[in-house]
Amino acid sequence: MISRRSVLGGALAAAGLPLLAPGSPAGGEAHAVEGLPPAGPRRAPAPVPAAFTTAMPVPRVLRPLASTGDVDCYELTIRKTTAEILPGFSTDVLTYDGHFPGPVIHARSGRRVLVRHHNGLQMPVAVHLHGGMVPPASDGNPMDVFAPGTSRTYTYTNRQPHASLWFHDHAHHMESEHVYRGLSGTYLLTDDLEQSLPLPKGQYDVPITLRDARFDEKGRLAYTMADRNRTTLLANGRPTPYFQVAARKYRFRLLNGANLRILALALSDGTPLTQIASDGGLLERPVAVPVLTLSPGERADVVVDFSRYPVGTRLVLTNSGPGGKPEQVGKVLRFDVVRTAEDPSSVPRVLRHLPPASALAAPAVTRRIELSMDEDGRPDPRGFVNGRLYDPDRVDTTVAFGSSEIWNVVNTNKRVAHNFHMHLVQFRVLERGGVPAGPTEAGLKDTVRVMPGETVKLHVTFDGFRGDYVYHCHMLDHSAMGMMATFRVR
Image 1 (tube, rainbow, N blue to C red):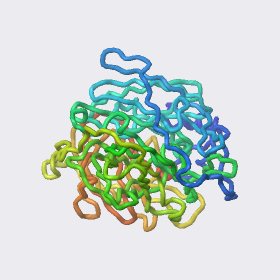
Image 2 (cartoon, helix red, strand yellow):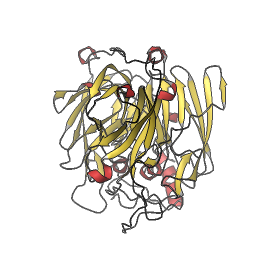
Image 3 (cartoon, rainbow, N blue to C red):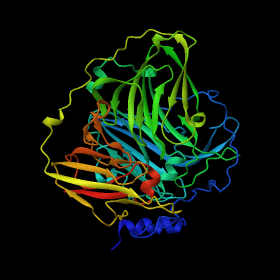
Image 4 (cartoon, rainbow, N blue to C red):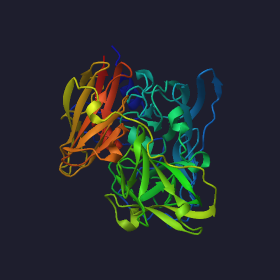
């Protein structure tokens, strides 16, 4: 019998990459792809420009190749190209249709989207719609890859409310490096409720992907697994850029697209960010957030009202998250107020209605999910879920379709942070460390941070599709090390 494991094993072997077997060490799974330069032991000075000397681009919005009835069709080629990330340097990147930063797809609830991807690389790939409720065949399972020179059509039914989603590569053992080198894009799903609100729209609704990177002396992206020297912060693919704004309200859709780095974001003048949405769409009410914390894969939509600042103001988005020195990673992006503008937008006091925790469906099962990895200093650490490495031929958890469950997710490490992402579902965070979840986590979520020794309590309802899906740490270096498991909805 040919399994998904044997298929990907053959593809990896052809590419010179090993498949991690249960019980085997994780060393060697992080390899440079497509002839891109690996990071050597040398730490040569990178030609990173001074902060706020490059402009932040707005990602390109893709137009459907065809729209018929209730379906929008797109066609993209996954390919290597070059981008000028650092001024004056041409950097090899992996892209969806040549776009770096990744492109934007606009979708609407109840209207299907078909995306046909052509694999123009020399490596197998899989495309995952992060946060999407999609059938198994279109989920981008880590083992459900398509080979170089072939194509795959993904069907997104959009049977869920509005949300700021994203898509990225998910080929196991390679997802970490593929995403690091550029394979991610934005998928903005809207619906009648969101459209009826007077929130900032059009050019004043801006997706921003934040991440870190390390460059070598030739301006090339340098990659090694669990690299702690990724200390150049990128906003929409540019190093610590500036962005010109009008003196009015903007909606910024923030995504932490880093592999490992947790971001703690704030405005330099101390004005709180107004958070209006999280992973799965709008919160019930806007929340004033002095410091916004996002772990890899998490999203938050915030509104910043620049009308309170005179033209000529320069306002910095700062980062106080762990890892790196403040002079390296303390500044993320500068907003330059350059003009006045009319502003018909506003932020309603009530954005949507969600059932309170007390009104959620009674759980049929309560589970304990332990995330852990080796932290004894070995050169090739492994990642585990409930003490086991990922095995694609093993179903770790079986749930009943339509049922609700409580998942207590525990980080058993003493020093290493993790986070937790489930495919297929949006869950509710009930508690963090035994305390009710705060207002920024009170909405629908698909990714949640879990700090060392911490437990988060989730309420999950499995009413989307039947089939096999995965849950894993979305610090992608950790999932590539084996911190992933399979759940089956039947």
